[in-house]
Image 1 (tube, rainbow, N blue to C red):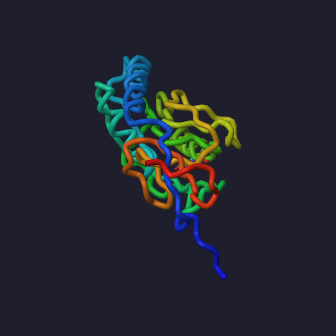
Image 2: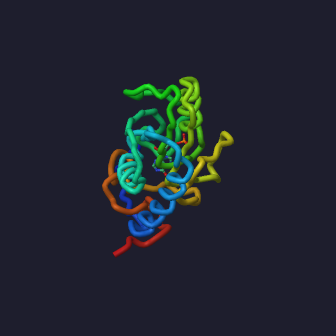
Image 3: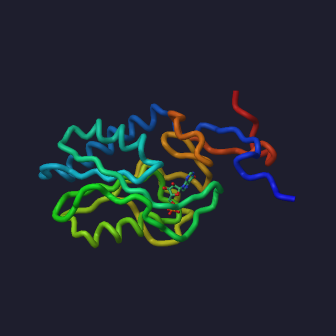
Length: 192
Ligand code: IMP
């Protein structure tokens, strides 16, 4: 018999980081980025699809500087809660970055494999400056040494959703970051 896939198990979501806390943190991060790139004519902001689409939308509106937005998609998770180690580039940038100032925007740094592979690829194109920002960081899960230039929130080893981040392609549109709690594990009561 085939087992029930993870996404078919009943679960609920507990709020971990509220929409208000995210917005406040983004204002702080935008100030730091503006300062770091104060001499930059036009910043190329590269969002890693699909998880960073909400974060990048809010971040660029706080930046108050000249930006160009581009996207890159690298494979990581399937429909399960374990990260695969193999990173494939599924969609490349539209624009050239040679000699440009670039900021890579990631939703979560987990094992670190995705961002490491993406940075290696982008470095090979010789940008003038290449920095990274991750909304979330799970340092306990790291398999390769890596730290984003700026991090929104360090979180414990939990599977999170919302604010662009999915579980089996669901929950990306939640305005907050929440943890997935499987009801049959009995770790928490469903929130009201
Ligand atoms: P890494 O290569 O293990 O660092 O994985 C990074 C990618 O895995 C992120 O960009 C997410 O797309 C995905 N990911 C990592 N942790 C979570 C999670 O808790 N929920 C949903 N996706 C996650």
